[in-house]
Image 1 (cartoon, rainbow, N blue to C red):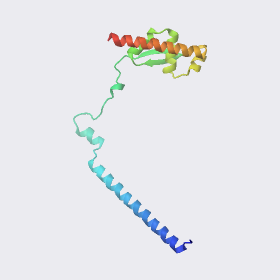
Image 2 (image 1 turned 90 degrees about the vertical axis):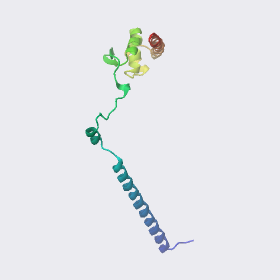
Image 3 (image 1 turned 45 degrees about the vertical axis):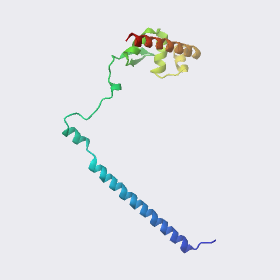
Image 4 (image 1 turned 90 degrees about the horizontal axis):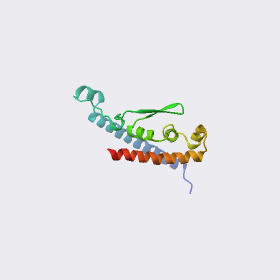
Length: 146
């Protein structure tokens, strides 16, 4: 079935008119919603000037309650924010402590740590796992003591 050219143009004009109507209605909805929000919102500057309290909050996770401890590993300074973790790390041997700090604070892979320490990768992996077990025991001791 062949459609005439006039019919195709009429369908196309109807489609264009429909699209224009949809876009017009969406624009009206957007401006209406924006006006409603503007009427109900309060600016931050107004809050700062007209409230007796400071409109802010402090996340408790970022408040330093412990004294940070610094460790030097691979000629880099690593800061451990938790006193409990720092004490537990001090209970580990120097080699194990270096491996843990390189892995979790300097974010080096076992292969990179092995190259820096001159050990096989499997040895580094074994020592890391042993250090984590020892660290877990030390952390449990400090938790039980409190």
